Amino acid sequence: MSETKILNCIVCPMGCEMTATIEGGTVTNVTGNTCPRGAKYAQEEITAPKRMLTSTVRITGGLLPLLPVVSKNPLPKDKVLACAEHLRTITVEAPIAEGATICENILGLGVDIVASRAMDVHAE
Amino acid sequence: MQNTLYDVIIIGGGPAGLSAAYSAYENGAKKILIIERDRELGGILQQCIHNGFGLHHFKEELTGPGYAYRCAELIKGKEEIEVLIDTMVLLITRDKTVTAVSPEHGLLKLKGKTIILTMGCRERTRGAIRIPGERPAGVFTAGAAQRMVNMEGYLPGHKIVILGSGDIGLIMARRMSLEGCKVQAVLEICPFSNGLTRNIVQCLHDYDIPLHLSHTITKIHGRDRITGITAAQVDDKMQPIPGTEFDIECDTLLLSVGLIPENELSQGLGLEMHPLTNGPIVDQRRHTTLDGIFAAGNVVHVHDLVDFVSEEAEIAGKFAAFHAQATHPPMLRRVNVKTGDGIRTCVPQRLSLPPAGEDSKLFMRVGKPERKVKLEVKSGDTVIMSKMLPVAKPSEMIAINIPAEKTATFGGEITVSINREV
Ligand SMILES: Cc1cc2nc3c(=O)[nH]c(=O)nc-3n(C[C@H](O)[C@H](O)[C@H](O)COP(=O)(O)OP(=O)(O)OC[C@H]3O[C@@H](n4cnc5c(N)ncnc54)[C@H](O)[C@@H]3O)c2cc1C
Ligand code: SF4
Image 1 (tube, rainbow over the protein chains, first blue to last red):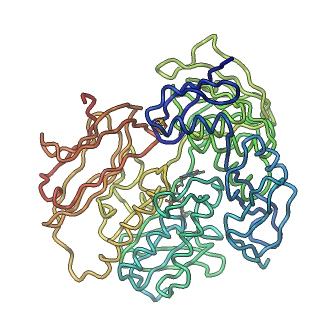
Image 2 (image 1 turned 180 degrees about the vertical axis):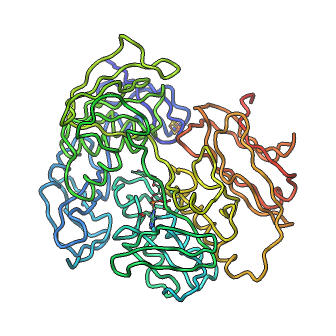
Image 3 (image 1 turned 30 degrees about the horizontal axis):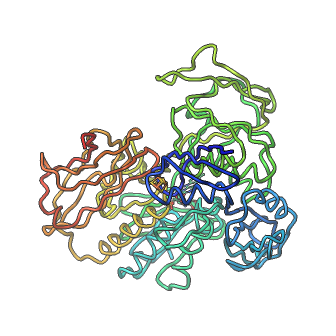
């Protein structure tokens, strides 16, 4: 039993349209890619797709009510929405340094969420 | 402050202004002033919380605020660089006097030997594209919505339609989805998206958001609050095709229909403007048509990569610093840069060359998507430089660097064009 999947390579601006053949959960063949990086991307994107997450958490005592945050490493794609939802429940307090850990090991996925910027205490 | 004659006054504290200040400092300017109207430095990047910035300039992948932070760190604690925030520049005159106003200092008159314009750009609004229908609440520019969601902490609505598939529209589609909203559709009047493939995949496909190419909005429904829109397919002249209309329900419409340089101050100064870039005409040093006035970043032409913004601003900062320190004006030869077949815009629009020539980097945009073409720089009929382009899209700026010795051979005019016979 094999199936095929059409996907666009995002590794470089060429944006090759590729067709991947999948057998029993593994990619057995890729066509349409101009270079080997396309095949590698198709392999990853089909078997274990990952995404970076950028979002915000609430912050008190800073210039703004929100602090932008970013995942230190990519997260499994199907867990991204759950992680974003979890971040909506977090509130931190200024001051925060750039790169400070905001949520350690989010949802047990082994990835930390860190501050994208610094935010000092803001006197009203 | 008001009695100081500054070497360089920089209008706008976004990445362009900050990079220009740092470069002016590195090139010997002693009195540098940055004026920013917002409460903090960083410009529009503070609201672009996604990542993908800085791969060229800082050699790592940063978020917008992360990039702004790096730029601000560069100038921090430098005695030579003064910063005025919460200060709006109202007027610049030809004698390089800047009139500004702030709650803290009131009305200020400041004088510079040189001025660098780095005011960035703003978004086109509904008025600029004319959609018929009522004017209910719930219609925002994508950038205004981005500021609300990412900096101010509230959502513009819950059921969203986005008009325009440039990167800002795509990024907002994902952002609203992550905040638990339902993005019903993205509509694009062109037969192709102006966004990066990466953004189409990761912002639309990931969240099952349909993209309707060659479609526009023909009607907005709702009286007090928007309740939906009518979409229709367009023909190759971008006119709606009767019979193709369909309705989409929504409580929010985001318009992502392009950016225009913020140039009221430049026009007040009487700078020569370019009709297609909507920014001032500059040479390779980012010197405008008025002596001692420079410009860089989105105020000159809308960039898609902030890395190029910093690069351009560093050039402007360096030459403004040299200009402020020079005792007599240099003798320079003028070369016009023309756009030929396939190229829509090119910055700089002219070169001002010393006798030995000068390294000159050209930034261009094509008029329509192309594949496997050659970019050519010609002086008369001679091809001076060329570059193969596997793909070229109007949304992605193309850069080519011309070394000094080649520019020394130029006549009074060069042309950049696309050669499709390769
Ligand atoms: C809504 C929006 C979203 C964007 N998203 C992206 C993105 O996702 N990725 C990307 O690469 N690029 C994005 N861009 C493009 C981005 O603007 C540039 O990459 C870059 O930030 C431009 O830098 P700049 O310094 O030229 O302009 P800006 O960052 O806009 O900075 C200009 C500064 O000048 C100040 N200013 C203007 N007029 C005055 C005045 N009269 N007095 C005092 N101060 C003044 C403004 O307050 C602002 O801080 C976006 C642009 C917009 C408008
Ligand atoms: S397959 Fe290679 S050439 Fe094609 S988009 Fe991917 S990286 Fe670029």
